[in-house]
Image (cartoon, rainbow, N blue to C red; front, side, top):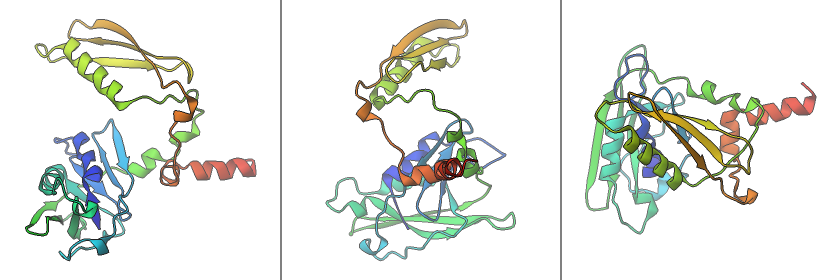
Length: 239
């Protein structure tokens, strides 16, 4: 199995300190899907589709049926070791060279290997803990009626987060909170929130992209995770 840097980028939302579940890890499924959660936010990335046969022979193994977990620090180190500018896309990835899942409460083992054709680096770690049942969290979410679908640029979200952190400041350590109000697909999102220990209020508008054609449709991989196909079949049967 090959895992590219985009797949491992989900480690950015891992939570370092949690005793109940292994949310300080990235979940790697047999099909190459990567998942991470901090208990509030969950993010899954579609498999890269890279072919193991195109990668140098470093002892690549397949992912077991139940999937494995990769500690966030190992994921970060693997990304750091990946060549940054090579003509072959497949080299901008790492190979899974050990994938032993946790069994009967014992530790598992993970090893990720990178190479630039001149130097090969291997980093490994024991793994412990249980990743949350993330598929059950996604399944059925789309069953609720959708009232508005709004597409926006990621750069706008980044600007909002950066600005709200500035408003909150760092002296009192109080994190800003927001409520997002969606009225329709063509109207701006209303941002209502507060920041700082004195809960200083702010109000904003976030404009969606103007053309409806910009709406990002779900692909088959996403529909499967959301249970959309099952919902469609039930609707067709009149259930």
